Amino acid sequence: MVVQLSWLRTFVTVYRLGSLTKAAQRLELSQPTVTHQIRNLERTFGKELFERVPQGVVPTCAADSLIRDVQGPVDALGIVVERHFGTGPGGRPLCVGGPVELISSRVVPAVSDLVADGLRINFSFGLADDLLERLASGHYDLVLSTVRPRLRGISAVTLVDEEFAILASPELASGIPTGRIMKEGPAAVLDKYPLIAYAESLPIIRRYWLTVFGIRPTSAPSLVIPDLRGVLAAVKSSAGISVLPTYLAADALLRGEAVKLLEPEIPPINTFYLATRDGGMCHPDLTLLHSHLLMKARLWV
Image 1: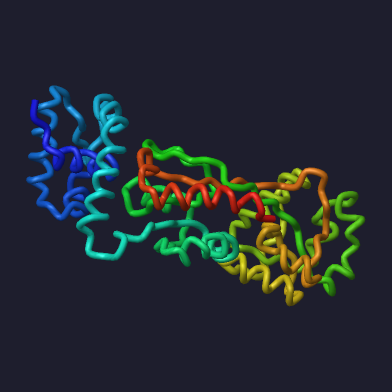
Image 2 (image 1 turned 180 degrees about the horizontal axis):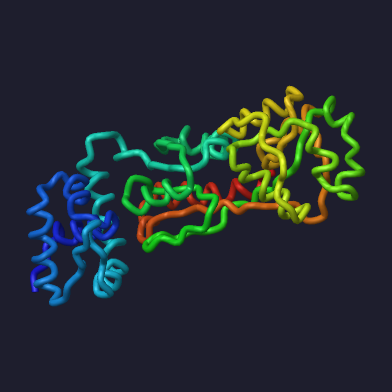
């Protein structure tokens, strides 16, 4: 039985992308070449690896079994080739995706020492579902996700829990009867103050309201800013109240530029995950970055 390494690389790429066309584009091959290599592998393997569907291809059970054994060695071989024959110094940079606020405020400072020692990283921002899809298809090496990945071929470990707090500027908070919020309900006390939100649908505020008050918010946002750093800036300038992760507001709270309106016994939290492709941790730079972030995250507020 003779199996060419190029067939296995094509198999891994098709498996991850779920499409012969996309795999051909990624590998810079013609689609007939990709199809031919997959058929050669199926003929050699003696089993069908993909079912053709209108949207692309779906891996069979045989493909699910094969990918577990070959993707690690194929990725490792790709790293060796890149290291010795790549055009750039030290091969390509790591591609990391995640939410702009966490990466800007915590991740970038945490990895500055690695960058100073020569590690190369390209950061990209986006929503968790989109980032995880691109991780699975090979665009990213590592994704910081606000949701636990459910995609086939993706593994994740808990990075850190973010805690949420309802905040206002000291000037605005001085006029809010905070002692009445839990007694009378948020609508009776807070609805008269402008609500600053990350999105029109109030995803973070809704989570806080349901966890702490057991109800959904009744007010529409007065100000929508699709960047939590902008939401924090608006809160500090007394534009209104909002719910923000405490890691992002830590400095503002420490300097007295914002204050918590409530201290619930069990504050709402959300978990960040470090997600990688199965077999991807054979990359030494990725292993270093992964362990470094886990270590540094213990110190984050």
